[in-house]
Length: 184
Image (tube, rainbow, N blue to C red; front, top):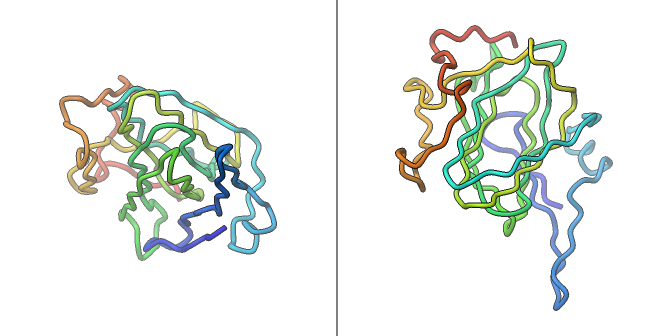
């Protein structure tokens, strides 16, 4: 398993060793010892999974303390552009984002620690996205920023037309980054 740093501190890209043969493939998606050695010492309390059509955009979301969550995210089937935004006050990379393609075929994972907004857009129909979280869901602790915030400048439509995007009502009314007060 290769766990590498991204340009944003504490945000880690995980690329497992995949063994393939005529039966298919096998890989280890989680190993607490290897993750701890890389600085990921989260105790996961819940696994979540979503099924999405092409163009579904989910995000940008986080939860504030005491329900802040670290997320270990990956795609089982299909593909996404996955995005994490640093919202840690005082961080040298505050307001910066990282984008990576996660897919059922590349097997990549992203560790998104507490203090980051997270979101993704699906690039294929029938995409299954899964994530382990380090804290339970609490509706009152939800925070977020509008997906198309001009300050963040995230290129969600690099591989999909904006007119094809599917968003929830909740995600359409999130505040702009300039109006967002980070609790981290």
